[in-house]
Amino acid sequence: MIFKRTEMLFGKENIEKFGETKIAVFGLGGVGSYACESLARSGFKKFILVDFDVVDLTNINRQNIALHSTIGRFKTEVMSERILDINPEAEIEIFTEFADLETRKRMLSDDVDFVVDAIDSLNPKVGLLEDVYHLGIPVISSMGAGNRIDPSKIMINDLSKTFNCQLAYRVRKYLRRRGITTGIDCVFSSEPANDLFNDDSESNKDEKSVIRGREREPIGSVSYLTAIMGLWTASFVIRRISGRL
Image 1 (tube, rainbow, N blue to C red):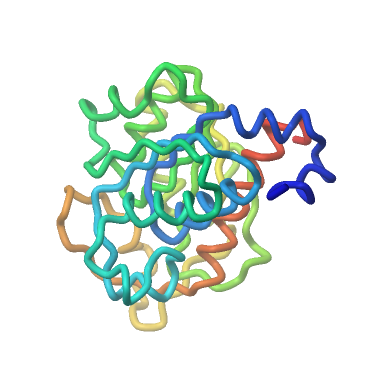
Image 2 (image 1 turned 90 degrees about the vertical axis):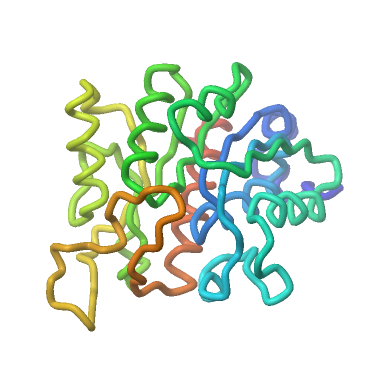
């Protein structure tokens, strides 16, 4: 049995529960791709995958779906194939489009049990979190992973208790304007952002709002940091659904 060793930790009942839980993953970059893989390897097999982008050469340093053989392909399609290669029984719905106010209505179907927010752009991230909050769907949201190198600073907490993360600060600010102050769990790094090539650390180029498809200024990133944030994200889902959190 594929998941026998996971069953030894969580029990048969929880493995069955994982298999029946539908997870919507928004964003399949460095964090989202690792979160997806970890969930698939833990027995989850119902997925909604959302990302409008294609794999780029610059993604290879941090995204597990980014290979020379996948450059130019849609991330949703590559991630779907990878999940099916892990578990051929997986049921996957993909949305290769931007998650905006209108499209999210289709993406957040009535049977979504849990949302993983790995969007790295401010406006769509805030919009998604506002939607799931009002719909009452459990969510774990990942904050800024760029320009950070210390994995020991990664932690999980309510968004209201985050610090040293400009993306989290801005998400909090925007959500407060919409009447949401607590109730959003997130993975974040308490390490101040590093930028060896620009002393203007307050600019946080990785955390600017982005219009779909608009090219953003590159920032520093490292493979293990985004991967660990993705794995922490998956761990939250697994432990919450199994009652271990």
